[in-house]
Amino acid sequence: MKTFIFLIILIFIINNGLANEKNYYLSLKNNKVNVRYGPGFDYPIKYIYKKIFLPVKVIDKKENFRRIVDFKKNSGWIHISQLKKSNSLIVLEDKILFKKPTKFSKPIAKLKKGRLLIVKKCQKKWCKVKTGEFTGWINSYNVWGKF
Image 1 (cartoon, one colour):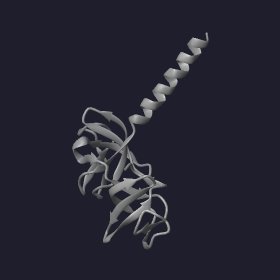
Image 2 (cartoon, rainbow, N blue to C red):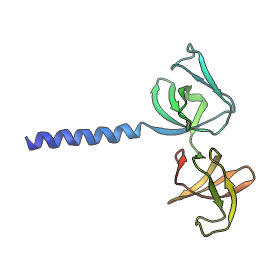
Image 3 (cartoon, rainbow, N blue to C red):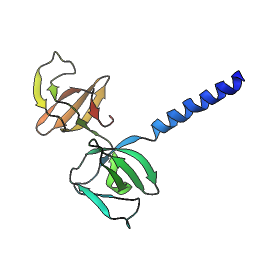
Image 4 (cartoon, helix red, strand yellow):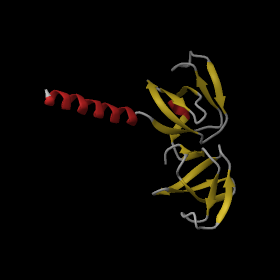
């Protein structure tokens, strides 16, 4: 009986691990991307993204379409040709952009909630990012997207 219970717990742990692996981040490849109600060109367009590099979380897939959700919890289906490997983040709270990867470094700019950042590289809890004319480091806590 103990072996049976252990086996059930082990299967539950493995399934939870696999479920988390299927959710991953991609970025929009173009400035205009159609989001559809279903996984096919026959489905009507739900809305249109007009922001290149916007990170989205993939929550399902069917053939060449991916069901995504954005940082505002909007969801829909996008053709895989409109997506690429994620290299961006969105700030979920106001943050300070620093010259070096430490909070004791010189502050460069204040980033408002919702700001799109292009990731150059990450180390531990800090990411070097570019946004507009500024390049610097942010703490990677409370951001949307994977780095």
